[in-house]
View 1 (cartoon, rainbow, N blue to C red):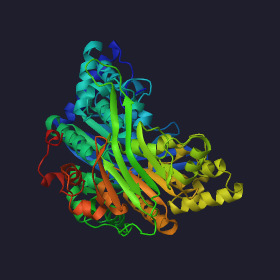
View 2: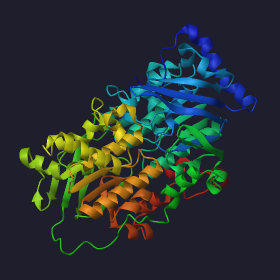
View 3: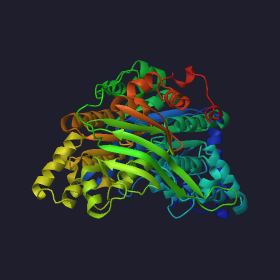
View 4: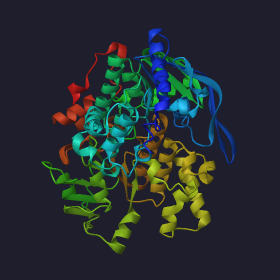
Length: 585
């Protein structure tokens, strides 16, 4: 069930095919030819509304030891192109035309049995969504070990220790403990690193990374991308990097391919594309990218003092603590203090950003504020009332005034609902309006998050990741709440839509006085949207201040490390000094 492994059982009779697959990349390297050569690739999906052409005549090359980035807006065909290369399209998708040559083989012509000798062993995939791609009933270590056993790289006994080592290489802290945990026990960033471990386990010659760092904080993102870069330099591994983060592409890719509406509109060396973009669409992406413009805060941030007329904060947190039990193991701790003595205040019409690495306690703190999980100790006050132990009608009243935009749009939207039902669900739950007025509200919200009203009748599975996240934002705003907790609300969005959503959040705040508790690992985004910032590390707040103060004069060494790790500040890979993951561990 581990989709990232992309493997099936390998029998003794398939050994020759395995050896043939191994020869594929050796031949390509020997001749200095492209490891991956895509020509005229066209892909379409069959939907209830007819055939949708998702990819149209795409050409691209990936050479051994190089990183090629595919960038573009959500729905531009980036991920469809990546999945078509290894023929992992959805059931209603198909390749209409084109060739995909991996070494001397055309992957579009291979049988499913032959593909199994290439997937996982020769081509690794890092999917975008770890919740869907990891088996929820298997421990993390077992899922990495499975890849090693299937490809004959380890015995059942040795695979366990090898899996821990691979998890450590992928940047997972305390890898031995995490290997014994299940996916739901890890943060989003930790799950994504587990997927990366699965992808690199067999030492493939090509890694297709579909938004591999969208759920990661900037410091861990840097470590992971440093590791992927080391693979390209040490063993000639190539990386096809699908990303909406132009800062990441600028720092890591030797070549950039820009896609729009299923077509390649511009391609070339990274420096050439970024410094002298020829296509108007490329110029628009560059203008909207926050990572490439961190020195220029956007107008959406309106810094200033808290209004003196409001003596009672909307949210006040005092001495909040949350502990979790850990799997029993000799010599290891029995519990983890995920949140340790956290306190802050948030006023109406203001945005407080909680920033820090994955696992620092940001999301756990937010869930306690919303009363979605119980604190071990501490107090939570909402509009002056103590809601620490709120139950029943009191908790329901809080839900009416406080909403959440989840980090993961794949898991947060009911796959059985239409988009119209998803957005109007809060209105139905609180008996707001009738059916007609609810649909009118849904259309209004879709327009504000840059989606057409035509998606109302579609299902979440028919939308891209970025489109789903926009739907999640619309749903959270349906009840016009006093507080919206935004848990990585734009991490799945391309830069242009990200800019639209940040503008939307700022406009709504100016119009309605809504307060945002904004959780993010992207400090470039935080600088644009936040009034105050609290930096969290290992469950504690280590520094607080206004956004301008913190970015201009960070006092804590950890804050300075986070700022230094913002992507897009450096030059293209050919012009910057290589940094190893050990330097940033």
